[in-house]
Length: 127
Image (cartoon, rainbow, N blue to C red):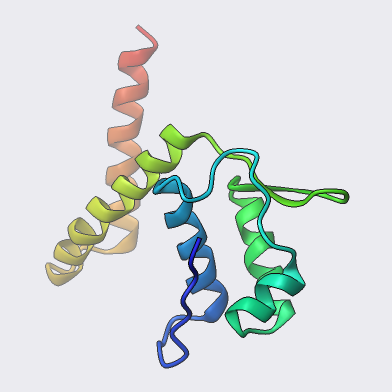
């Protein structure tokens, strides 16, 4: 797995690290059960602060991409089908939301629409 941080980007370093790890999982560069480098090793390799790596690992754990084990450290633990679905959904939503924002659709209107559509699908599944 190759991690490249753009220090001139407006995107936070921990976000860049999270996104690259997620992409590595999707591309099968990182697999279920595989250990990530320790916080110190990742920080040294990438050239960022250990606290930044720790924050990224913490977020990835909260989002269900990693587990943290005292003996093994950070371990990839994710349902690959769900990860791929989430990446595809994010790519699709990015453009859809950009178009909606250009048309002055509010965040609340988007949430209401998503909730309504999601409920309709849940209703179909429960029949």
